Length: 342
Image 1 (cartoon, rainbow, N blue to C red):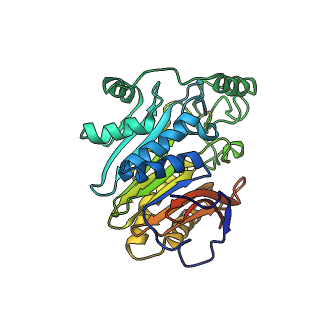
Image 2 (image 1 turned 30 degrees about the horizontal axis):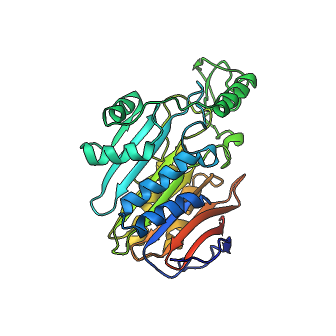
Image 3 (image 1 turned 90 degrees about the horizontal axis):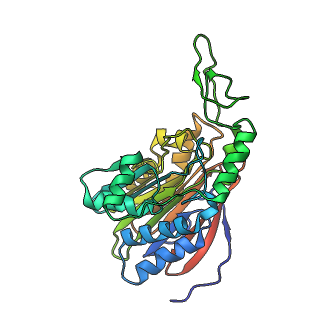
């Protein structure tokens, strides 16, 4: 099936309608990761399921190291190691598989699917998740690259700035660790380091796929925050936070600063708004607005799709994010779309 030329389309968020007439099948993903969307769409077109499409689409980004924020060789933690978070969700059965802080395994989204289909668990983390993956036939290999080594070396040379510690000794704003808890009086105010709050240093691919018959799947994959504290797991592998799918209502996927967004389960919230009949764009907007009540300038965005193929997106205006780009494939378009942040 042919598609119109690949050109950006700018859309405002003020409308109370979804961004386009409902059409199925549908693939939508965060950020302009065209190859990932195309891989997912091709999977659907060749008879694959929505789960297959999400897995293949996210895998494409893991292989391509999309923006250095997905897959191996990017976003080293404070020890210089790249670890991965991912999840996938079956909207028909509400089954979820997720992995967090996955070490030495490149195919995070595929491991997440194996967790869902070959265990009774929902989320596996850390070294044990890696051993599980190896037992399931995944290759163990170093996720470090010259790029990630260079990022880490420069960070160490810059006295480990920025980092994600607070209320510790020595002063985390001027020194590297190891750190100890600061006793006595200390400030309870703490903001995410401004240098990290932009999509060049932290991001996720979140993807939604809907089959022509209405079956829905959603998933995410990321290598998390650059210079994160070792062991940190973000929102991406958490059901209802990173993504959520229910074939009776719709699906959503989030991107941004997971340590904030996961506290609000934004993907679940957006799906519940759509269950009430709220259009996808408005569902995304309302969900973003809930978070803004507590964090007015947080860095984050959300894509939403209802069960009939209507879709929308919203983002929070913050330093480094004035507009949000995302990909849409359906029977009439293969296109990058853009929304202004609120």
